[in-house]
Image (cartoon, rainbow, N blue to C red):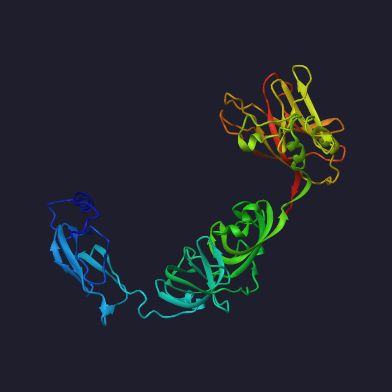
Length: 506
């Protein structure tokens, strides 16, 4: 069967003419030789011959491996050549795969076209057995057999193995399901990853021999030297920092952060954003500006902040379920993106012998209401958060007093909010502010606007504002309300998960 050429003759000749200048008056030997393929692969036995095209402006010759035949093995100008190989056999059985480079060159040796010739074979014939600790010292592309190794870490893209002496730790790129502590055997090829750390690729066989436990060595703490740490091995390390959803920040001054590479869901990292965590595992190299770790353990040391006030309104669940006088419960407008989700007025739901409004008042909350019409209720209960306002009516909330914030603190307030959408698709043009009042003196902080286009679905927006330049005492009033005050338009919004806190500096 004729080999399909990778480049067409006109394209290659155009390239040659560009290189040579195509000066027909000059008498020159071939200064450039091109081949229509750069790799060819053959079966181990009875391999079909392949045809490629050689492009040159003059004479060319070949350098041919002893198990490869090229016909013709020299020529002039553009010519097709046939390439064949001998059977790759030894003592009646397939020998190891082999490869060599076939070279087409001009007589001046100024340019060479190289074609890599590979031939299939028995990859594991005469393969040598190694321990996991011996793999790192092997040359890349060494075919290996590891009769016994221990799985010491698992990622979404493979696993780390070691020997019982923790001599060295090797990553195995393979999809076989294994567990930490498993004793395995494997057949594969030793390689190195982009960080020049030893790895095993092209695993043809991974067998779990038994289960067990891992005796980890004492990890090296690299937290204080995160910017200077480097290693040519997958050492066992530990580092402490703040997890931000993708990386670990060791300190604000550090040049490098830490990434937990291909972390399995069992580590629970998705729930630890904003927490101080200690990650222990195997070093996976530096990919600037990130130090990489394949984790074996993640310790949650709590939120990276001092929390002075926290309200998620989950305690309002009994009132939300009680709903209106007919027992219709409150709905979830934001989560369900549902404009028709039921929202009873705060005084209506009764639970534990008290209305939702009075339950909030007893906790120290105060509420503001303004209108361009006659007075009326315009604060509503959802499950489990609050809804403020209706057309021509606006509302706000004053937080309970807080008396545990130091005078030198730099607190921030954060909360989830969402503007309402009208039936026409228009999003209510809500602008929120925070007012901090001390002895009649008010300091106002703007909340970033939602910036939504019409028809945007309802979803929570996280607001976070530094309350700089103010002191918060037991007498301080902190108000969250809108700037349209009052207005004859619809400026409705939802509120949940209020927190006043201060970051902890590691």
